[in-house]
Image 1 (tube, helix red, strand yellow):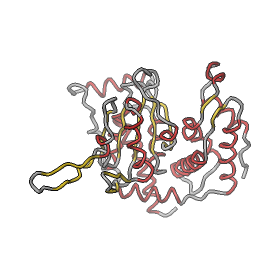
Image 2: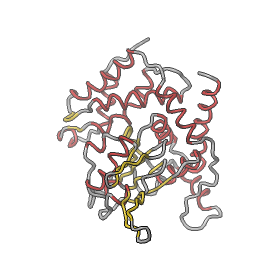
Image 3: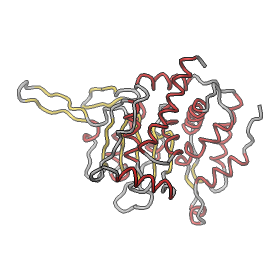
Image 4: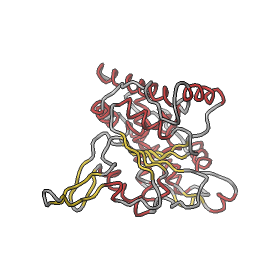
Length: 321
């Protein structure tokens, strides 16, 4: 690792620190979001309202000096409200394109399952190809580009479950939970001190990286050395998840790709120039939990995808050298 790359790595670790100045606790969620950013992938966050999901993405954008937009998904939201549309300019007597909020670096798709599938699908092209087509014209979005979508795990009335094709576009699915007691006390002191209303205060977050430097780190992540044994180990985990007792539908090849991409990012954050089995294990739950479906019997018995994946990781033999 060159001296310049080492300096960038120290600053990406500083990025985690800066985000946590605004978002108290939730260290693993912050780490997973940074892993998604380094791997140039998108992140689905599931958690109850009021746990800091919007603050998380806004803080990340502030620390990187990037453009941030938020879309509140509702049943009446239209695809053009996301991607943009054309309108007729009376003065010039021509049609011009008005770009939607998707044209940014970090996009928060809040409560994405509140909108029907037609609207959800407006994100498919930009998440996969980093471009948007409006009335036959294609426009590229700025890079780095990260979509963080949220959904509420307990409210199902008035929601539209994401199709598997949409879920599969997310590199990781992470859970955000209640903070600990000491952390919640720190949140109360921080949020209520000299502040009016419920404004999201990111003033304590310093800019530590530029968008161009994030692109350098993404390229560095993509060049991480991966031994053939690690590739084979990743494939064995995913293939086991297709055949394991209690799994109705397992992850496809995109799951294997996501697992390895995320493992590379974790290895980089650990300061290594190569991937080890612990990197694969460390990201396996987040990379695969949304790509498999349990049988009805397993769900009735109270099992979750994480329970089954833990069993798989315990039984698939990892390479020793």
